[in-house]
Image 1 (cartoon, helix red, strand yellow):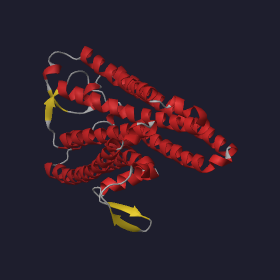
Image 2 (image 1 turned 90 degrees about the vertical axis):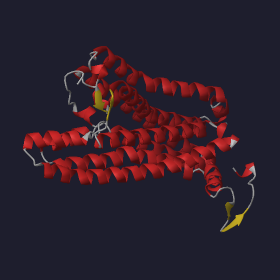
Image 3 (image 1 turned 180 degrees about the horizontal axis):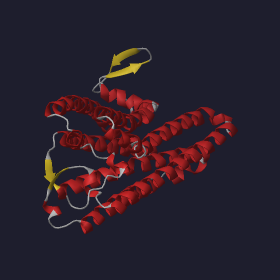
Image 4 (image 1 turned 180 degrees about the vertical axis):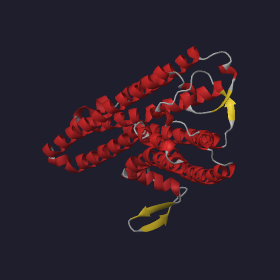
Length: 346
C-alpha cells in the first residue's frame, strides 16, 4: 500500500471491498475456505439486486433528462435546470458506485492513478447532490417569499452563476484530498495496482479525519439552511391566503428535499454502527452495510424523480408524452392518440 493503513470508521463506509474484509476475518477467526466461499454467494446476489435497481433508476432518470432537453420551457426555468442537474448527478453517482462495488466484489485490480481520479469524481458528485438540493430549496424560498423579485433573481445568468458556485464548492474537498494523497504517496505506491475504493486515498490519518469532519460540518450547515427555508415558507403560507395552494405545495417540496438531504447526511453516521459489527458477525456486517447502501445511497436518488418528475404537473405531462413515444396522452379518463402535443399544455 502507499502509506500506513488507516481504518477510520467514517471513511470505511465508502469502500465496498467486502471480499477483503472476509479474507481478513478468515485469517483472524480461522474460518475454512468452504465457509468463505459460502459467504460470497449472498454477497454476489446482493450485488446483482443493486445492479438491477440502478439500471431501473438510470432508465427513469434518462427519460426525465431527455424530457427536460426536448422542451425549451424547461431550459428557461431555474428549478427545472437544478432538477436536471440533480438527475444527472444522481445517475452518475449510482453508475460509479455500482461499478466500484462490482470491481470490489470481484477483486478486480486497477492502476492506482486512474482509481484516484475515479474516486475523486465520485467524491465530487457525492458533495454536489446535497449542495444542489440546498439551491433548489432557496429557489422555492424566493418564489414563495419574494414573488415580485423571483423573475429578476431567477435569470439565466444568475442560474449559470449558481451552477458554477455549486460545482466549485463540490470540487474543493475532493481536490484537496487528491492533492494531499499525491504529495504523501511514494513513487512505488503510484505504480501499484489496487482494488479501487476511496479508502485507497485515505491512508493518512489526519487527512481522513479532516475529510470526515469537514463533510459532516458542511451537511449540518446545509440541513440548517433547509430547515430555516421551510420555516420561512410556512410563515409566508400562513400570511398569504391567496397563494395558499402554491405555498403548501412548496412546503411539501422543501420537506422532501429535507428528507433527501437527511438521508445523504446519514451516509457519514452509519459507519459508527457498522464497524463494531466487523468483529462480531461477518454476515450481519454485510447485511447491515447492504441495507445502509440501499437506504442512504439509492433512496435519495429515488426521491429526485418523485419531487419534480411526478409531482410537477407541467413536467409530468411532458414526461408522460415521451414515455409513450409521443403517441399517447391522457385526456381526462381516456387515452387518445395524437401526433403532437401543443407546447401550451406544458
